Length: 225
Image (cartoon, rainbow, N blue to C red):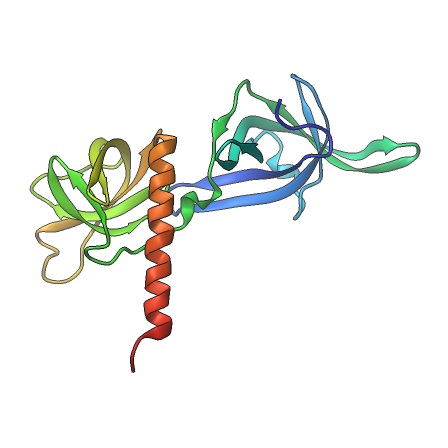
């Protein structure tokens, strides 16, 4: 494994893709092998009702192009109240049974940007550009015509355009809601999550979102009265 005793990690206890929320808690690795990983009690502490829950251990790894965050899936199976560190010293600990392998993970998945017009970000469904309400590394929300309705859980093929470069991506609809105002009869709003987004596309989208965000903040700070 990439982590060793003493490694600092982040434990993801909960994903809420529907509302784009995430519960992340810090911990330190005490001991590990292929069958189990023993970590410090998280900060804030993990309660016993989380036993049996699927979790993700995430950590940073230095690679050629810089720090990259990876995740290991697993299941929280035990909270030990008196884990022995050394001598007579005992502490609380949690035990996670890991799954084989690792995957790229980004804790910024849930930051949502409301992109202004002509910022270099565009999304296409069936070759028709849709109106992006907000977008993150994890997904997007957009409006489109009711004449081609989308149902929750539908799989979608989209084109994501970043500064005139187009990328084929896949997504899953999470919820569909009405649009208020005079366009409500014609439009519906669709919230979706991206599926297996390529790391290169994630990196490009992350850079773009941060760049647009910085420009928006700059304009806010230096806007003329």
